Amino acid sequence: MIVARKWMRTVTLLTLLTLTGCATPFPNSTRTGRIHDVNIEHDVIPAELTVAIGDEIRWVNHRVGRVSVYFLDDIQKRLSCERGFRSWWTAGRFSPISPYQGASLCFSTAGVYKYNVRMEANVPGGEIIQPGIIRVVETPRSGA
Image (cartoon, rainbow, N blue to C red; front, top):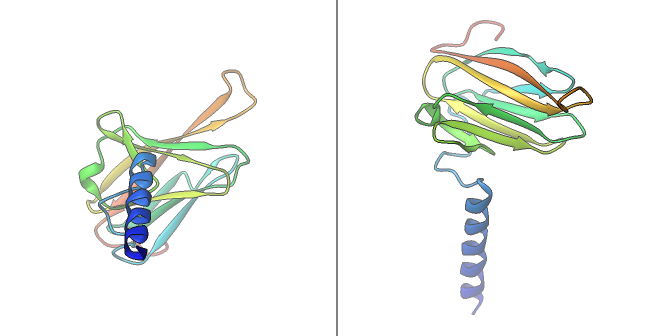
């Protein structure tokens, strides 16, 4: 009976994670152990970031409202870890981030990856979209 309950809780949790987009085939840790934060406040800081292959890039929402981070290009096959992101249409990745929460990715391939951060704001149209760039290199540059 106890084993059946634990099994049911596990199945329920896995179903919930899958439905919310949190289930992922990627590991829960970085390959290199380095984590780089991109802070979303009034602006995206830093807007451009250079990291090594396998480093984790973590977007942290410091705003009182929800924000969205999205990549329009197909990056799925270039990832080695992913937390909080899900499919965006057929190619890109997308993550809605609640206030004071975060989402992260690790890239397995060197390249330049462009993304946008959509934030609610008191401006005409009701939102601000700020671009960002992640440069992934074979080896880390000093000071990166």
